[in-house]
Length: 338
Ligand code: SF4
Image (cartoon, rainbow, N blue to C red):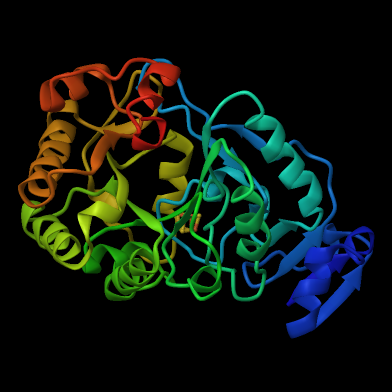
């Protein structure tokens, strides 16, 4: 059900949603039953754009996020939102003018990569809450931005009627068996690749996130197959970048994963506590996994920029033979800054 807080009733996003959906106006979003199928459109005055949270210990690419939506209809076993958000329902900022104002302010003096996929899936709800129709025309008028929709869905219809100029669409990828077991309600691998093919043929730059890589039996076989399938279906000239990183999480999230109804493969892994306090695979194992994915991609695709999200400089050095440095230095390696 879609609920609209009274203060958000007249906002353009609400009007857009109300045209095609039943809505119920309420005083306060706190009244709704807290479940993933409930959406609350609100009108709050937060600062919507901020730097991706990171530590200095692991290399961070200075990515910025816009938290226009908080909550996700999908239910990935490893999802950090289980820990970060105090609610299961989906909260959407109806006051998109303020969101766009915050984006404009953050790119006033510098070019940024900004994405909406931190506290939600960027496109999973785009059929009912068509934020893409508001964001894309706005970012296309700016000079200093590459906007990323990051998703595990195949909801791309709205994008296929918009101008791809300053926009890229990216997919998190895992082998089909991991998607089935660990990423409930998301689009299958087949559907994600089909959607990626569609938008890239239309003219959008695309990205792929092998994140989180998850250790499993015969790791190299399913991940090798996945990479071969991807690289055979998508034109590498349309790929803006690829990220690779292994599963990691705060210790408290591990407790949540252990308590989930369906058992997760993650509870069987061998982990250490990283220098930042997070649960991670052993460094030697991380290197093996990341190196395998890197080499398999490079065997098929020579051009796309590959980076490691939140990895130690020594891992970069070992596999790619360079260290990208801290945030501002790191981001200069991305193709959009060249
Ligand atoms: S798609 Fe992303 S935000 Fe949604 S449940 Fe999965 S990990 Fe969480």
